[in-house]
Each structure stands twice: as C-alpha cells, then as structure tokens.
Image 1: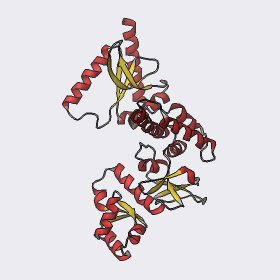
Image 2: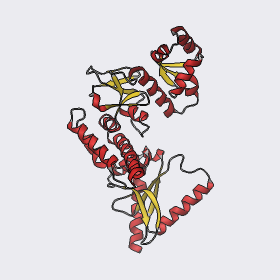
Image 3: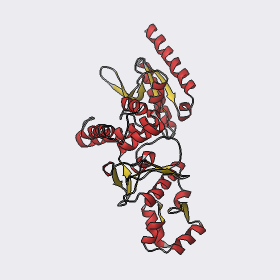
Image 4: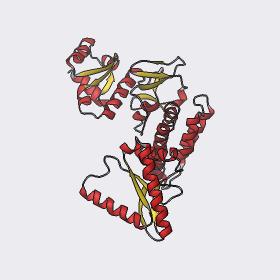
Length: 328
C-alpha cells in the first residue's frame, strides 16, 4: 500500500475518503489498485477503511469506522452541506448510544432535502449553529443528537443517549468544581430547552418521556436500559447509584433501587468481573446488602430482552422484601 495513504488513514483511526487521498497527492490509479488488492475496503464510492483496522475491530468498532469514513466523505470539517447526526454523531462525541439499524445518520446544513439509501440516512436540514466540528468532522451537538435518537427510535434509546450526555456533563462538573450540579449540566438543560423552543425539535410524546426520566447518575447503557424497563413494567422510577448505609457507615453504591420497595437491581455487564476474587468480593457485598434489609435482583443483557422474566424476578424480590418486613 502507498505509505502516504496508510499514514493519512491511520491518523484518522483507519477511515477516510478517496477525495482526501487525492487531495493529499495519491493518484486515482493507486487508490483503485489498493482497493482491488483488498488493503482498502470501500463502504461507499468515496468512503474507505483500512483492511487492517476492520480485521482487528469489534462489531461496534466497525460501525464506528463506517461512520467516520462516510463522515470524512460527506461531512468533513470546513464543508457546509452535511453533518453527522443521531447515533452517528454520538459515536464521534464518544458518548453512549443505542438504537436500531446500521445506517449512517446525517443532516443537511444547506437547506436541501434529505435522502436515504443502503448506507446513509440524510435527515432534514438543521441550522449552522446546531453543528460543531469534532476530530475533523462536522457533527450536531450531543444534546441534539440524543433528542434526535429519542424522536426516531423511542424512549429507551433516547434515555440511554441523554443519560450519557448528562453523565459526561456532571462528571465534568465534579472535576471542575467539586460538586454534582454545576454549569456543565445546566448548559445541557439550557441546550435542550433552546432546541425545543426552536423549529429543530418537536416535543413529541417520546421526547417528553425522555426528558422526564433522563438521569445522568446512570453509569452505563445497561443501567439506563434497566431503569427504563423497570419504569415500563410499572415499578416506578428507580433511583440510580443508590447509597447503602446505616447511621454511621456507607457500605456501597448500587446500580438501582426501586422507589417503593427494599429491592436493589444490579446490572451485570460482560466486563464487570475479571477473576474469581472479584466474584467472591461481589458475593460478600451482596450478602452484606441483604443483611441490611434489602433484596437483590441481578439483570444481564439477555434478561433485558425478556421483560416477562424481569417482571417475575422483580415481583419475587418484592414478595421476599415484604415477607422480611413482616417478620422484622
């Protein structure tokens, strides 16, 4: 492979556009030959990815590479016609996202109409003030991207995305000011209000639900999805990052606590435990939580796909908590 092609794409995480390569001095013949050899993979006519980057990537990372390749083709920094949006923008912002489909989402920024094909979904236009430049790409801001997901994919996806936006803002508040609710979080709320007052976003039922339930204390996609499912199943608004303590001692912080019952819900992702010692420590922690009067329910990614099973687990835990209370 031409060394300059490799260096340019590697500097961009493994993805870019043919136009970039030509501007950088590569010939069309060399680019086409590199594609024919398989060292470059074309995802669109003008969007390419290094084969080595794809070979070593997870499905999530491959989706991100496709977004970056299309972004460098249609929404490079300094260009005025497109910007990445929805889940695609959140990928570039390095924020959590959730929602169906593998399409790359963009918006027009030149007042022209959108379009859709097998790779991209170009939505209607947004004004220039709603767009920023991140890592060489034009993207809509995080708050707008999260609301777009809520509007197009529903409340579960929207809550995941807006929780992530709020969590980053609140983490920045803690870093900058030593307190939980500072100007960064306030800025996100202000942005949301501004977007809803403008013609960009409409306060649909889904958007209203997301705004009511969003909570930056959720620490992961799994926790946000668990919180939404508990709400959907009628168990009320669970409290994220609930502190387990008695009068003098903090014993730990758990993922979720049901609003009206002494029931704790913990979400177990795939990377939570790294060895037998972690499992033993978690068992001791859970025993301690039960000793303090709580019932514990553990949910996994698989459980989230089976709401009936989750409902049965929660109802059983509530029954145990109520029986424990009567005995106590």
